[in-house]
Structures are given as C-alpha cells and as structure tokens.
Image 1 (cartoon, rainbow, N blue to C red):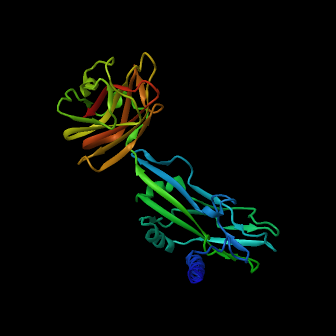
Image 2: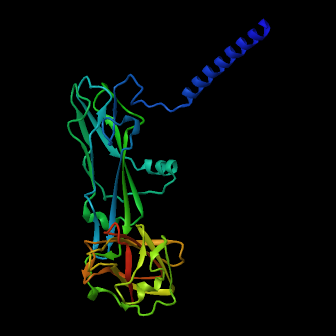
Image 3: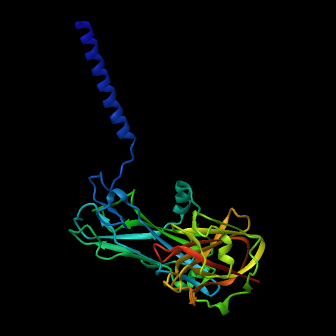
Length: 343
C-alpha cells in the first residue's frame, strides 16, 4: 500500500513539473510587445484610441469611386493621428514620420493581399512630425497625410497601401516602438456604373417586351405569386412575394445583351407608399463571376407613379444580372414589375 502511495506521489510531482515546463515554454514562444511589456518609454501609434492597446489596428480605409463623370470619395481621404508614449516623457520629444513603401511588399506577404504602392506625387504629406510635451503621453499635434481629389483619377489599381512609419525622435529620452510604429492608409477603388437620378427618358435603349425565355431565380422562397411571370405581366396589382429580405434576384437572359437600365415596381408602391430602399446591381458573363455596378437607393432612384428607375452612366454587356433588393416595408415584400432596358 505504501509503495503504491509513493508511486502516486512521484507521478504527481513529475506531472506537475512537466506542466510547469510546458507553461514556461509556451510563454517563451509568444510574441512580445514593447508597448505593453517594456521598462523603456516607447513612442507608438494607436489610431484606435489610447485605451485599446490590446487591439492596435492603425489603419485608415477609404474608397474611391470612378465614373464617366469623374472620381470621388464619400469622405475626404485624410489620415490624421497623434503619437503616444507608454509613460509621460521626461522632456519634450518631437517624433518624425515618413512614407516607407518598402513595407508594402512585406504587408502583402504577411496578409496574403496584393496592394499597390501609391504613384509618386499622389500623396500630400501635410505634416510629418508631432511633439509630445514634457510630462505628457499624447502629442499636442498630429501627423496629417491626405490625397487631393484632383489625384483620384490617377489611382486605377484595385487597391493601394500607404505605410506611414515613425522614423526618428529628437532626443534619447524615449525610443520608438518596434511593434507599433506604423499606420496604414488603405485606398480601395471601384468603377461605379449605376448613375443616380436618371428618369425614364434617360435610360439607354428600350424596355424588353418578351421575357418568356429568361431564367429567373430568387435567393428566398416565394410566399405569394409563385409564378415568376407575374413580374412581367404588366399588372402592378400582382406580385412575386417573399417573407424575408434582403433578397437577390438572378436573371439569365440566355444571350448577351447591352443593358441600359432597370425599372422596378414594389408591390403596393402607390397604395401604401412601399418602395425599394436599396438595390445593388451586378452583372456577369458566365453566371459565376459577377461585377458590381453600384447601388441605387430610394433617394437616388427617380420614382414616377410608383415605378423606380435605375440608370447607368454607360451601357454594359452581359448575359446575367443580379439585383439585391431591400424593401422599405417590414411586412409587404413583393415585386410587382421588373423591367430591363436594352439596346
């Protein structure tokens, strides 16, 4: 009995030591972060806010929309951020920053993406230094990098990356973080073909009159008017109805056509004022790979007697199209009429 007890105790001790060794080994394998585990005063960037050290993202993302009438962005492309220190600095420190395009390749490899470098002269380096005053841990001014709208048309690649790296400081009272010294400006670009505020007279081509050969499917199960032909019967009182939304309608026109716009009528558009609040338009040549043309909203679709019109900046050729629709109503979700303009 004593022998068994002795063996059990020995086993417990050996197991405990193994666990301790495993824990220390695991800790040694983890990445260390000088911002949170260093006795030095470190200068760093945290664009997410001073209280989110565990989740430093340091990225600013923008989208440029290219149309035949020009290139725009929903907001000004302007990255503005302070520099911070892990502790109040013992003397005033000025921190300098620079664009380091060598980091684009490394970022692409680490994140399995393919960002391009910004063309020379496209970025405006308005302010590339910031000062942390003595006794403070946040700079009194901010780094400021922007892109003038006049340069937007030059940015034709799908996506760009601008790495802004802290490069030097004015004295030795602090050191730059090696983990969090870079902020990233991400610029996505897309061609937008859906044009706002186009009336019926501004559509390219004429409405299709025969939809009988088309293949139409929906992402949801119809609850009313199971025959898809009710969208093409010319009667706004009938409908193809659904219980849920958003809903995606996919159409195979059976041959490539030159599309010039769309016309929709939501069920009870006139009697109850129901509209399509959002329609995302996409087209495809093969029914597999779709290109998004843009989004039409209730505010950007001309509404004439209940019909809502989706115009285009230019015609597009495709065999398939998709309309991802959202209704303004939470109870009445039906498509009374769907019309397609072709040339």
